[in-house]
Length: 217
View 1 (spheres, rainbow, N blue to C red):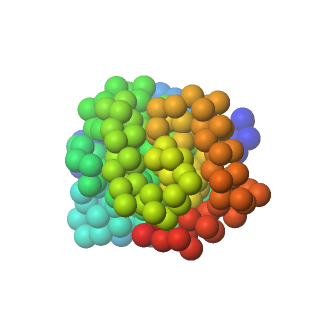
View 2 (cartoon, rainbow, N blue to C red):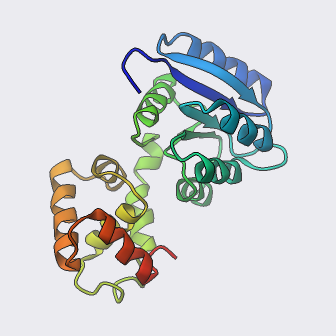
């Protein structure tokens, strides 16, 4: 999106007081434009596909279709729409299920208002952003996902396997750096090592190798 365009936002949350608070907050930011509200997961899917906003602010617990399933369905049909989860839930299952199904941000309700604003701005630009409390847990989570994967790619180190897993999920280098708490230079070095050890020319070929191996299952 160009610099003079407003970021169009859909709010999906079944609590009217919280929706009203978000409306007030987002209304203070000149670059934001709230284009719709949804109170159920089904409404969120319908409105997201109809309105094509830049960002959906998605609660997890909603009547009917929950926010994680709604996220998956929106992402499958319109992957260009950025989805930020706003939830009281901080358990790993909820957080990482949302990430697997396409969420590019996760902010805890009650976080600083600036955290919500930054997450919207980042996701609208195609980046990922997570609350600090969540970001600190991401490296441990992805390390746990790699257990038993060493035999698939014996030449890769544990860290390189983590990087390959994130490449296969189509995360960019800056996003990988954010998730794994690494510098951009370190991530670039790991990506280069992964491509070299897999003897592939680019990320697309690495993604194919990862999927064929069952790394993402």
